[in-house]
Amino acid sequence: MIYFELFLAFFIPNIIGYGGGPAIIPLIEAEVVGRYGWMSAQEFAETLALGNALPSPIATKMAGYVGYDVAGIAGALIAVLATVLPSLLLMLGALGLLYRHRHSPRVKRMSQWVRPVIAVMMAWLTWSFFSEGLVGAGLLHTLLIGAASAIALLRFRLHPAFVILAALVYGGLFLG
Image (tube, rainbow, N blue to C red; front, side, top):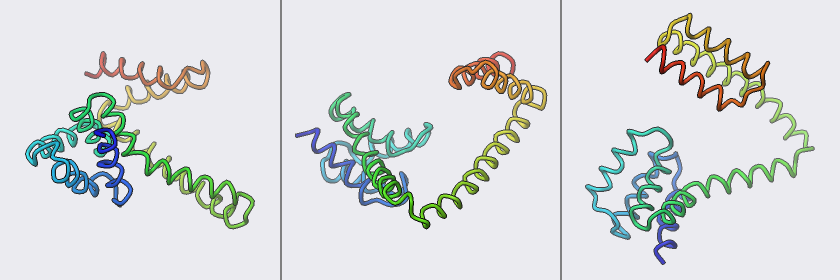
């Protein structure tokens, strides 16, 4: 029964909440503190503060922590699943709808307009990372890491995870 309650405690706020993690935190608090009493308001606030200090989406971190606190590893898995399931179902539904109407002129026009927008967003992200790299590491290190990464990816076809790991090691040795 506890697993079902955990599922509901995180699925309902994520299905009815709109606006991402910060918008659904009060809904999750109402379930965790108010409805089920798994935490006090103070404990929830401390968990939220810790979750905000760590990278990644806040809702999944909260779900994982509360689920683990209430029912161990299985509870954490169920709570995280309940958190991501609404978005996953919506994405699958939208993908199915787009796939079903993929030959429609409207869908084709829409996808033609989306591609340039994504390209611009990716270019902006790349420029932003490059600018931050210049400020943080300097021109020489930024160009060296960029060139070595491009060669490793394009010429030697290394997996991106290894390239990122190598860049982290380089940064730790020479920039840290």
